[in-house]
Image (tube, rainbow, N blue to C red; front, top):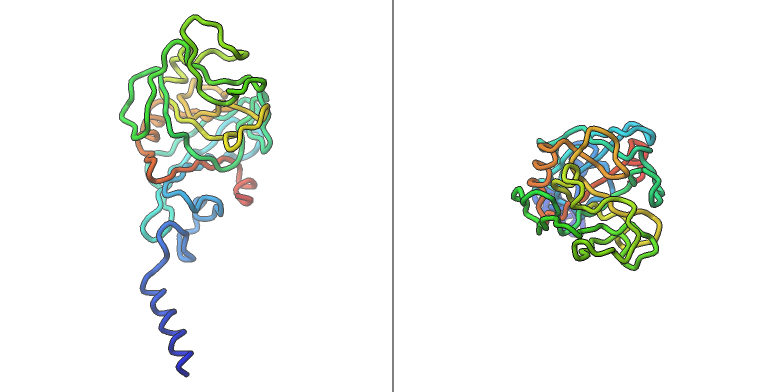
Amino acid sequence: MRCLAVVFAAAAALLVAGPTAGGPSATCPGNLANRLRTVDSADQLITVQASSYATTFASLRLWQRGGDGCFRPVPGGSTARLGVNGLKDRRREGDGTTPTGVYRIGPVMYGNSPNPGVRYRYRRVVCGDWWVEDPASPDYNTFRHVPCGRRPPFRTNPPGMWQDPVAYRHLAVVEFNMRPVIPGRGSGIFLHVSKGRPTAGCISLPLAQLVSTLLWLRPAKRPLIAIGTPVTFRRL
């Protein structure tokens, strides 16, 4: 009987304490964010859900984890544009697809325009700023500055970051193929400003929605971005 009393007391204590902050509870709302199994480290989450792998449109939503450990939606969602060839689970360099999966947001945000007030480190883009997309380069899938006017020591098919003041007015880095970097898997996946058409693989939003999303993100909340379709999300 004494053992049973101890068990009941422990169970009662758990009920009083409630769910652990930072982890989902069995009583959490059954929304998309709470169904994902690979986002427990995050207190902020961006979901980018497309209806199929072939589409170039997706619904972008923001989620905040509360003290009860549950994700709930917050204002700031929008229709996003994806790669010209849709989504892909195993993206390759230059294939025009947006990679599926769950990724961190990079520690530095960039832009051709002044910092709109983000909580991240922010680098104002200048002439000679590149994101290296040459798989043969040891700097593949990283930011590098080359003195303005000097020929970079890597192949440069796309324009430099400073040469696209519309898309790269402000951007956040999606840490795809960064832990570790695998040559040829893909590079330069950003959350950037939409030009009203599909991207080369990035995720784009109208300017106002992009800025509000970047301002919402907090490094201390360990934000993640989850990209996929309803089928993809059942695996994540």
